[in-house]
Image (cartoon, rainbow, N blue to C red):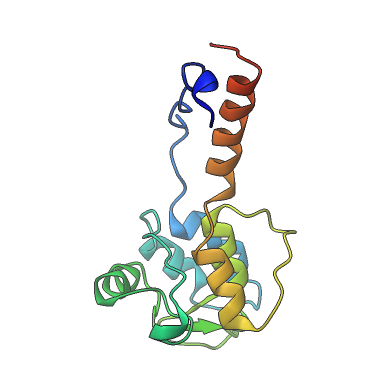
Length: 151
């Protein structure tokens, strides 16, 4: 941003809404194949999601991050060692993995947002993205600064 606008830029205020837990956010997706364990999983997944990391070509495929992140996911009842193509089947037992769509929702993408490529490149697009709700809030503040408005 040019110096002439910097005095007009104000960072957005934090969102006052309580963030949804992983269970609240993903229950409908986790249960879309009538998984019998979905209700119990929702109760276990009662915290907000750890930060998603997109990874890199150097460090392999789509997983939910380094060891510490994977442990945090495991505490929420999620196997962080990779992604699945679809939600758990009806008779699944164990810790489910997330799907690309689930990670996109966690990151704040609308459910109708389309990603292209195979699973790992799609996950990298999501994990490396600036969360859309945050980008929108910052973008609105930039527009105000460019219009030289202070609130």
